[in-house]
Length: 115
Image (cartoon, rainbow, N blue to C red; front, side, top):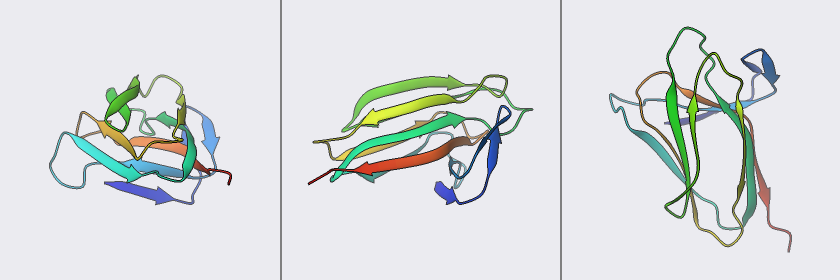
């Protein structure tokens, strides 16, 4: 499940003005969300774990089914910067491999193609 919040969140002490959360919408330990990104040029954000008392989780990002980023996110490490080129592609998928903790994307931004 992907949920966007226009609220401030802290990832390892860094404040982000808004965020999205990829979390278990049920009992699945393999959560993924796919977006239609036709018409967009780029995705940017910062991936991390907001809870400080949980283990790590793996995040994989795919564009049209091809892995473009893979990170082990840990609560004791800073959020990782994501910059994903999207021009000419159709889908953007975020996948996490564990039920908990949720993956947080600070300041998620899609940039539209310039016509």
